[in-house]
Image 1 (cartoon, rainbow, N blue to C red):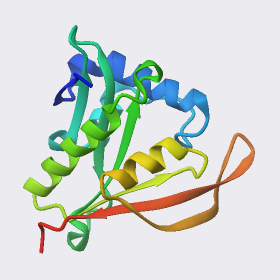
Image 2 (cartoon, rainbow, N blue to C red):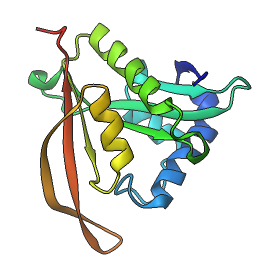
Image 3 (tube, rainbow, N blue to C red):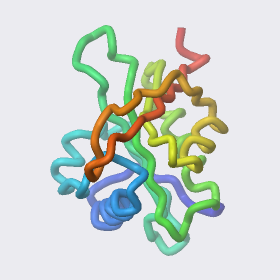
Length: 164
């Protein structure tokens, strides 16, 4: 993969949100039914821990972003993330590169745990997360309805070996 990883900002909003909507439309990425506005996305995601992967022409191939898990001080070192890749760019290492960027930024900030919830049907996402050091910590069975069907969510986390 020859993508350039860069901070995700408003300049990438239209393409990033279209990639998000494509993931939503496929049905195995999130409980969400529509992508948020950029203002809502921007407010919900930590600005220091979100990245875009760009091709040589500057087109967004994918993105990763993290959000606080809680405002409680005990959870200051824990974030939850999402990673989405354009359907035409999958299988090229984009998600792996984005996850590596997220890991580097969170570790530099003293964040010790990155977590995520992934539908068990999303085998590709589960596999790439495990390849970059995430581990399955359990399954939340029938945690929510998605288009009228109960769905499970596999919980994954990556604990930093550098933060003690």
